[in-house]
Length: 114
Length: 109
Image 1: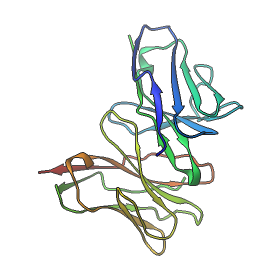
Image 2: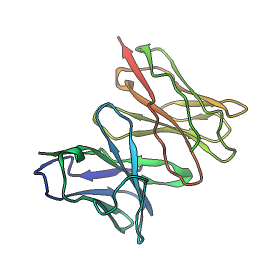
Image 3: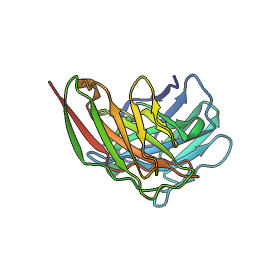
Image 4: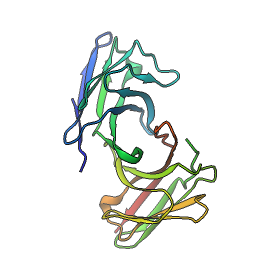
Protein backbone atom coordinates (compact mmCIF):
# COMPACT_ATOMS: atom_id res chain seq x y z
CA UNK A 1 0.00 0.00 0.00
CA UNK A 2 0.89 3.66 -0.04
CA UNK A 3 3.31 4.52 2.75
CA UNK A 4 4.09 8.01 3.99
CA UNK A 5 6.86 8.67 6.47
CA UNK A 6 7.69 11.69 8.59
CA UNK A 7 10.90 12.71 10.23
CA UNK A 8 11.45 13.37 13.03
CA UNK A 9 8.68 11.64 14.97
CA UNK A 10 9.16 14.07 17.82
CA UNK A 11 11.25 17.17 18.44
CA UNK A 12 11.85 19.52 21.34
CA UNK A 13 13.26 22.94 20.62
CA UNK A 14 13.86 26.25 22.30
CA UNK A 15 11.64 29.23 21.69
CA UNK A 16 12.87 31.31 18.76
CA UNK A 17 14.52 28.47 16.86
CA UNK A 18 13.36 26.90 13.61
CA UNK A 19 12.37 23.29 13.10
CA UNK A 20 12.12 21.38 9.83
CA UNK A 21 9.79 18.41 9.42
CA UNK A 22 10.11 16.08 6.43
CA UNK A 23 7.31 14.17 4.76
CA UNK A 24 8.13 11.43 2.26
CA UNK A 25 6.01 9.19 0.08
CA UNK A 26 7.99 5.96 0.11
CA UNK A 27 6.49 3.83 -2.63
CA UNK A 28 4.66 6.28 -4.84
CA UNK A 29 4.93 9.76 -6.27
CA UNK A 30 2.75 12.51 -4.92
CA UNK A 31 2.22 15.75 -6.78
CA UNK A 32 0.07 17.01 -3.93
CA UNK A 33 0.77 16.75 -0.24
CA UNK A 34 -1.03 18.32 2.68
CA UNK A 35 0.06 19.55 6.09
CA UNK A 36 -2.23 19.37 9.11
CA UNK A 37 -1.94 20.40 12.72
CA UNK A 38 -3.71 18.77 15.63
CA UNK A 39 -3.90 20.17 19.15
CA UNK A 40 -4.68 17.88 22.10
CA UNK A 41 -8.24 16.55 22.12
CA UNK A 42 -9.04 18.37 18.89
CA UNK A 43 -9.48 17.29 15.32
CA UNK A 44 -7.02 17.78 12.49
CA UNK A 45 -6.88 21.21 10.91
CA UNK A 46 -5.55 21.65 7.41
CA UNK A 47 -2.71 24.16 7.28
CA UNK A 48 -1.67 24.12 3.65
CA UNK A 49 -1.66 22.28 0.36
CA UNK A 50 1.75 21.58 -1.10
CA UNK A 51 2.12 21.08 -4.83
CA UNK A 52 5.33 19.82 -6.36
CA UNK A 53 7.22 22.56 -8.14
CA UNK A 54 4.94 25.39 -7.10
CA UNK A 55 4.12 27.53 -4.11
CA UNK A 56 2.02 26.09 -1.34
CA UNK A 57 -1.55 27.21 -0.79
CA UNK A 58 -2.22 28.17 2.80
CA UNK A 59 -5.51 28.00 4.63
CA UNK A 60 -7.00 31.15 6.05
CA UNK A 61 -5.30 32.18 9.27
CA UNK A 62 -2.09 30.22 8.66
CA UNK A 63 0.98 32.45 8.38
CA UNK A 64 2.94 31.49 5.29
CA UNK A 65 6.09 33.24 6.51
CA UNK A 66 6.02 31.30 9.73
CA UNK A 67 5.24 27.88 8.27
CA UNK A 68 7.47 27.49 5.24
CA UNK A 69 6.57 24.65 2.91
CA UNK A 70 8.81 23.27 0.19
CA UNK A 71 7.78 20.48 -2.20
CA UNK A 72 10.90 20.13 -4.29
CA UNK A 73 10.34 16.58 -5.53
CA UNK A 74 7.51 14.15 -6.12
CA UNK A 75 8.36 12.25 -2.95
CA UNK A 76 9.35 14.94 -0.46
CA UNK A 77 7.66 17.90 1.15
CA UNK A 78 9.08 19.82 4.09
CA UNK A 79 7.47 22.06 6.68
CA UNK A 80 9.69 24.52 8.53
CA UNK A 81 8.30 26.17 11.62
CA UNK A 82 10.27 29.39 11.89
CA UNK A 83 10.88 31.26 15.12
CA UNK A 84 8.90 28.68 17.03
CA UNK A 85 7.01 29.65 20.16
CA UNK A 86 5.31 27.53 22.82
CA UNK A 87 1.92 28.04 21.17
CA UNK A 88 3.29 26.26 18.08
CA UNK A 89 3.62 23.09 20.12
CA UNK A 90 1.35 20.61 18.41
CA UNK A 91 1.11 17.35 16.46
CA UNK A 92 1.98 18.00 12.82
CA UNK A 93 0.78 15.47 10.26
CA UNK A 94 1.36 15.31 6.53
CA UNK A 95 -0.50 13.39 3.89
CA UNK A 96 -0.08 12.57 0.23
CA UNK A 97 -2.93 12.41 -2.22
CA UNK A 98 -3.50 9.54 -4.61
CA UNK A 99 -6.33 8.86 -7.04
CA UNK A 100 -9.96 9.65 -6.19
CA UNK A 101 -8.87 12.15 -3.57
CA UNK A 102 -7.75 9.49 -1.14
CA UNK A 103 -4.99 10.65 1.16
CA UNK A 104 -2.40 8.57 2.94
CA UNK A 105 -1.09 10.05 6.14
CA UNK A 106 2.26 10.07 7.83
CA UNK A 107 2.64 9.00 11.46
CA UNK A 108 2.91 12.59 12.66
CA UNK A 109 5.57 14.72 14.33
CA UNK A 110 5.10 15.94 17.85
CA UNK A 111 6.67 19.37 18.31
CA UNK A 112 7.30 20.77 21.77
CA UNK A 113 8.62 24.31 22.03
CA UNK A 114 10.09 25.23 25.39
CA UNK B 1 -16.53 20.26 1.52
CA UNK B 2 -19.97 19.09 2.54
CA UNK B 3 -20.57 18.90 6.27
CA UNK B 4 -21.01 15.50 7.87
CA UNK B 5 -22.66 14.56 11.15
CA UNK B 6 -21.54 11.62 13.27
CA UNK B 7 -22.31 10.47 16.81
CA UNK B 8 -19.65 11.55 19.26
CA UNK B 9 -19.04 8.08 20.59
CA UNK B 10 -20.07 4.46 20.28
CA UNK B 11 -19.29 1.30 22.16
CA UNK B 12 -18.96 -2.24 20.96
CA UNK B 13 -18.05 -5.61 22.35
CA UNK B 14 -15.13 -7.42 20.85
CA UNK B 15 -15.94 -9.88 18.06
CA UNK B 16 -19.27 -8.15 17.37
CA UNK B 17 -20.14 -6.11 14.27
CA UNK B 18 -20.13 -2.34 14.50
CA UNK B 19 -22.17 0.03 12.38
CA UNK B 20 -20.89 3.61 12.39
CA UNK B 21 -23.40 6.04 10.87
CA UNK B 22 -22.74 9.28 9.05
CA UNK B 23 -25.17 11.86 7.71
CA UNK B 24 -24.14 14.04 4.80
CA UNK B 25 -27.39 15.55 3.58
CA UNK B 26 -25.67 18.35 1.59
CA UNK B 27 -23.31 16.11 -0.35
CA UNK B 28 -22.92 17.04 -3.99
CA UNK B 29 -23.20 14.57 -6.83
CA UNK B 30 -19.45 14.34 -7.42
CA UNK B 31 -18.27 14.14 -3.81
CA UNK B 32 -16.71 10.92 -2.65
CA UNK B 33 -17.47 9.56 0.81
CA UNK B 34 -14.26 8.78 2.65
CA UNK B 35 -13.72 7.13 6.00
CA UNK B 36 -10.52 7.46 7.97
CA UNK B 37 -9.66 6.43 11.49
CA UNK B 38 -7.10 7.73 13.92
CA UNK B 39 -5.55 5.77 16.73
CA UNK B 40 -4.10 7.70 19.67
CA UNK B 41 -0.91 9.61 18.85
CA UNK B 42 -0.90 8.43 15.24
CA UNK B 43 -1.73 9.93 11.88
CA UNK B 44 -5.11 9.06 10.37
CA UNK B 45 -5.42 5.80 8.49
CA UNK B 46 -7.44 5.39 5.32
CA UNK B 47 -10.27 2.91 5.79
CA UNK B 48 -12.52 2.97 2.76
CA UNK B 49 -14.22 5.26 0.27
CA UNK B 50 -17.05 5.16 -2.21
CA UNK B 51 -19.19 7.22 -4.52
CA UNK B 52 -22.56 5.53 -5.05
CA UNK B 53 -22.25 1.78 -4.71
CA UNK B 54 -21.52 -0.18 -1.56
CA UNK B 55 -17.84 -1.04 -1.15
CA UNK B 56 -15.97 -3.81 0.60
CA UNK B 57 -12.30 -4.17 1.45
CA UNK B 58 -10.26 -6.14 3.93
CA UNK B 59 -10.82 -3.59 6.67
CA UNK B 60 -14.50 -2.74 6.40
CA UNK B 61 -17.61 -2.33 4.32
CA UNK B 62 -19.23 0.92 3.31
CA UNK B 63 -22.96 1.04 2.79
CA UNK B 64 -24.17 4.15 0.96
CA UNK B 65 -27.82 5.17 0.99
CA UNK B 66 -29.52 5.36 -2.35
CA UNK B 67 -29.95 9.13 -2.05
CA UNK B 68 -26.34 9.43 -0.81
CA UNK B 69 -27.42 11.55 2.13
CA UNK B 70 -26.04 9.04 4.58
CA UNK B 71 -23.61 6.17 4.81
CA UNK B 72 -22.60 3.50 7.29
CA UNK B 73 -19.17 2.09 7.96
CA UNK B 74 -19.37 -1.54 8.96
CA UNK B 75 -16.66 -3.32 10.90
CA UNK B 76 -17.66 -6.95 10.70
CA UNK B 77 -15.88 -8.13 13.84
CA UNK B 78 -14.57 -5.44 16.11
CA UNK B 79 -11.27 -6.03 17.87
CA UNK B 80 -9.50 -4.01 20.52
CA UNK B 81 -7.23 -2.67 17.78
CA UNK B 82 -10.25 -1.06 16.12
CA UNK B 83 -10.67 1.37 19.02
CA UNK B 84 -10.10 4.74 17.39
CA UNK B 85 -11.76 7.95 16.24
CA UNK B 86 -13.54 7.35 12.96
CA UNK B 87 -13.99 10.24 10.57
CA UNK B 88 -16.53 10.40 7.76
CA UNK B 89 -15.54 13.01 5.17
CA UNK B 90 -16.97 14.12 1.86
CA UNK B 91 -14.38 15.44 -0.56
CA UNK B 92 -15.18 18.35 -2.80
CA UNK B 93 -13.57 19.66 -5.95
CA UNK B 94 -10.61 21.05 -4.03
CA UNK B 95 -9.76 17.56 -2.83
CA UNK B 96 -9.24 18.85 0.66
CA UNK B 97 -10.28 16.81 3.66
CA UNK B 98 -12.16 18.67 6.36
CA UNK B 99 -12.05 16.67 9.56
CA UNK B 100 -14.96 16.97 11.95
CA UNK B 101 -14.98 15.59 15.46
CA UNK B 102 -15.63 12.03 14.32
CA UNK B 103 -16.95 9.10 16.32
CA UNK B 104 -14.85 7.69 19.12
CA UNK B 105 -15.29 3.92 19.09
CA UNK B 106 -14.64 2.02 22.28
CA UNK B 107 -14.26 -1.73 22.08
CA UNK B 108 -14.55 -3.79 25.21
CA UNK B 109 -13.85 -7.42 26.00
